[in-house]
Length: 153
Ligand code: MN
Image (cartoon, rainbow, N blue to C red; front, side, top):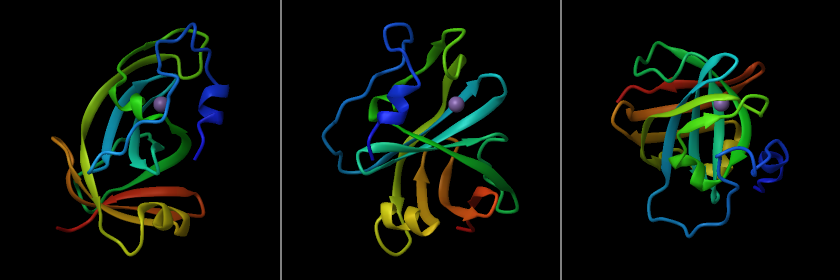
């Protein structure tokens, strides 16, 4: 997917966030969770899919408990370089506030078909290999948005 919406919202001369360019594919896709203290605190959950970071804002943050169903609001795709971004988005800018990397690592796709296909179908199963988050997860699209749920390993 293109980064048009991502770029449209930002003035790159004035924010330290990356503009984004195409990067070579790595052997294993990455994920990152960025703790974002903006107007309201949330955790941006991002998975490398199709050369960009598919993104969700998770108000309560991801949980390792299988009984927790965390609301995840789909947001615009972000460029791959955003996975390394931490810092201050200036006042008056989209997402103004501080961003810190809460967890990062790689993931594998578990369900049937590619990650992009599963996303399209509204149910994506994957296994994270991070420091805080490890093991199987699922993102499910519901009538009120997506849910991020830890699977039983
Ligand atoms: Mn955010």
